[in-house]
Amino acid sequence: MSTLLLALTAGAVIGLALGALGGGGSVLAVPALIYLLGFTPAAATTASLFIVAATSATALYTHAACGNVLWKTGALFAAAGIPPAIAAATLSTRAPEAVLTAAFAVIAALAALAMFKTPPAEQQPRPVRPARAAGAGAGLGTVTGFLGVGGGFLAVPALVSVLGLRMRAAVGTSLLVITVNSLAALTARAGTHTPLDWAVITPFTGAAILGAWDGKRLAAKTSGHTLQRIFAAVLLAVAALMLTDALH
Image (cartoon, rainbow, N blue to C red):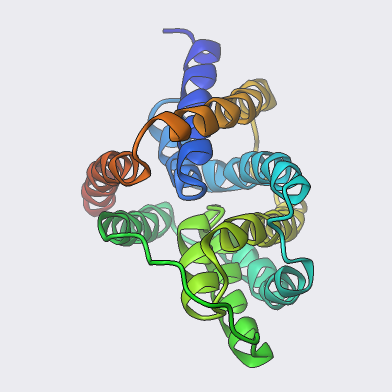
């Protein structure tokens, strides 16, 4: 299979997962870039930030049009994540490839295990505490910057459980946070000399954006919990593969 076709296929699958699940799909971008398209871990995490930022910004627009984005809460959460995202992104470029791969495998496994759980029930919104928002936002920014993932699988639960947002608002607001953190981390890596193959990244990103629209339609026809469990199983297998690779 040609590199272009692989990039289009992988991007479409990841976009489909993002659209169907509302978060978590981008965690497959890094392993796809490494194992299918031959990127180094450093290049894959950088490229993933671009893919995640573009896809999340597109999805943010649609959620904002539906009134599902709490801009003040999202801005506070995102602002707290910018400094750690930049610091973690800089540190990531100096980390050994085996460390990056192992760290990513652990985060992917944790995300998969979290997805196996029943989604949290809707709850009454409560006042946002700035200190809690800042703490959760800083943690998410660190993960985004170091591993090149959007962190939707972390942001949505944090916005629901820590800040008390309803699920729809949490998903929409998380896209604002993810977009800002990804752009901040990408800016920090702009001065590095990690080579990026834009002939692969561009079609990958385009396919992911288009796939996200199809994912939304898929979610309307299939049980969200069923889709989540299938994706979690795939993610857990990918995490095991990456951890095995890092330890050899």
